[in-house]
Length: 185
Image 1 (cartoon, rainbow, N blue to C red):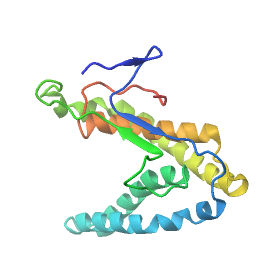
Image 2: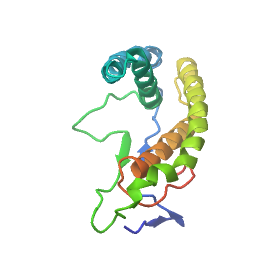
Image 3: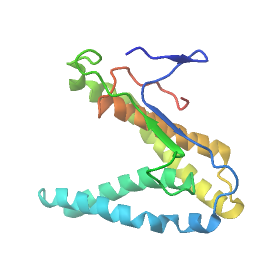
């Protein structure tokens, strides 16, 4: 699988993009958006508690699952007012190739990909701390101005993009191309 180039920069096979919201965001629904995430957190927490019941640590698994769901759900949730739909174009796009396992992927690389991605995990740990702070700042900015600050939007989108690239490489194994250390496409 040969990566293509756009404006001199290589395009990584796993792509994530999100349309910047045009116009003003709804300040009232933004204020209560955390409550919309509660059902998702309950389901994921229940799944985590089920896993922990076998190891004798039911509360620990639920806490990790709930925290992970918060990271994954609350960032993009503030970035648009549109409810996800199955029949129209979405503001959020995640594209990745269906891998040709026989020809396009090295059969021995999956054994070490998660080790090779350790530098990404370290960088992403600190980026997600900054992203959480950015999301909280953006939440207040939306409440007071009705606008998601463009710089914060681009940063959070970049962190999500980087995370998806690493997951595509080390976890779901759709590419053997090592993810770039960048927030941009």
